[in-house]
Amino acid sequence: MASVASAASVSYTNSQIANSNNTSYALNLNQFNTGLGTLTGVSVTIVFLKDGGSFTVTANAPGTVEIDTTKSLMQLNDPTGLLGFTGYSNSAYVFTTTPNANGAIVADPQGVGQLSSPQTFTVATNTIVNNSNSTITSGFWSAYQGAGNVAFALKQNPQISAFFTGNGGSFDTTAFLAQAQMSVTYTYDAAPPEVPEPSTVVAGAMLLGLGVAGAIRRRKQAKLA
Image 1 (cartoon, rainbow, N blue to C red):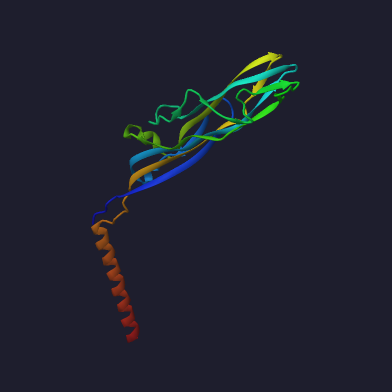
Image 2: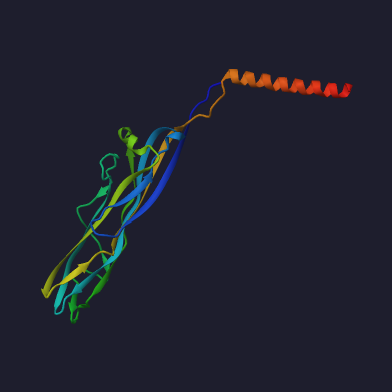
C-alpha cells in the first residue's frame, strides 16, 4: 500500500507595542514544527503598523516653546538580515495631534494665544502599513524551522523641532508609541500516516484467525461437556 503527502498550511499571529524612544522591541512569531511535514512555502504579513500615544511639552518660566514640526522615524524589520524580510523603514513621516501642535506655542506664564505649560498633545492614530505581504524565498526557510520563534524588530523615534525663548523648555516623548501586528503562514506537505508493512498485515490476520479458531474449539468442547 502507498501513502501520499497532502498539502496543508498553518499560521501564527502576534502583536507588539514600542513605547520608548529609539528602543527596539522584539515581535516574535512561531517557527514551523518540522514534525508536521515538509515545508513548501513561507509568507510574512504586516497586518498593521500604527502610531499613537502622546507627548508633553514643558516651557521653563519665564519662557516659551514654539513647535515647528512633528515627525517620527518608524521601523518594523528583520534585525539579523537572516529572515529574508525587508519590512518597513521610513526616513521620517509627519504625524498630527490634538490639540494641533503645528505652530503651537507653550508658555510659562501662559499668554494670549498660547497653551499653558506643561501641555500634552495626543497623537492621532495613523495606520502607516496595512496588510503588506512578503513571500520568503527558500534560501531563508531554515531560519523559520524549529521549536522556537523568529524575531522581528519594532522601533519608533519621534523627532519634534521647536523654537525656544527665555529659559526654553523640554519635550517628554516616552508616551509616544508604535503598534504592530504580524503573521506568518507556512505551507507544507503533511507527513503521511504510517502504513503497516504487508508482512505485518498478514501476520496480524493470521493471529486473528487463530484466535477465532481457538474460540470456536472452546465453544464446541464446552457443548460436549
